[in-house]
Length: 368
Ligand code: OSB
Ligand code: MG
Image 1 (tube, rainbow, N blue to C red):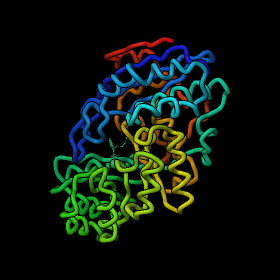
Image 2 (image 1 turned 30 degrees about the horizontal axis):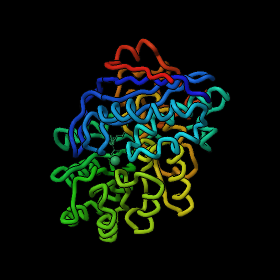
Image 3 (image 1 turned 180 degrees about the vertical axis):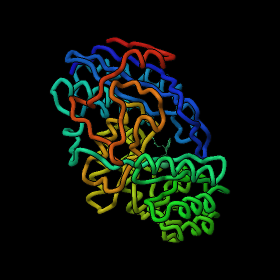
């Protein structure tokens, strides 16, 4: 496609309830959406950075700056390009993977729409719907957590993930196990522990968890291997897996036996497929993570999660898990514990222009 212009918008989407993790609480999702205008039509992408650099070094205003000053100009200068060219064009800029992922997705959406081909078909989706898990934030106390989890189970979510942090781990997990029995359950620490906490983390072994996600810091690969050897609960990496290379290294070092794949964190859906492929080759299960996406990223995640190596339910929940009003005309819905893989051209969503304008707080258009 020939890229003519790129529109970027910062959105502020109110959350249905505050979302608390070991690194902080979010009440409004600040996110960037990308509209690529090409000679063959337009395409949409989402840059999944958060307002503050707490989960990752990336954050929305930094993403806005690097997109405006470096990454979008590089793409506009390239002239004619295929989606597969985007990562190479952007590679001279170090890092900023979430920004690169959002830009690549917008170009990919435009190109696939022009071909009347769905993202799922392009990526290699093997199923028409994916099982839907939900990520539940830290609540006021374990009783409130049990209430929240019960609500999601009533809605039909097939797997529960609870956020933990030091002091809110064993008791919270025990409360959920006691209340609901043998449900598929996993925990996510978002890097809140160190190797000194191994005894506490080993206490979680008795709960038969599917996995513990990212107990240690992003760059603690060797420490994760040490920890994994001490736990019965499988260790899954999220923050640490920033590329297919990082995934290969983590597997080689036995730092993880499960991997969470997020397209934003690894620099795009094409790199995400490479992570999937190498894990599948190695017999390592993967699942699709989430970043409180709007309908754009949520629909794209459903397509990715439909690849055959995604053998565990992902954090691909319905739009109404986080938002009362999505920016797409058909919000992602939970149906019998599953989310449908879109079949329309490109990502398979249509933007609701009024809903989009209502949550837009900043807008810019860059032209060639
Ligand atoms: O660690 O998986 C995570 C949200 C923001 C940043 C990091 C994470 C999360 C979630 C929510 O757990 C996943 C979702 O979008 O449902
Ligand atoms: Mg995580």
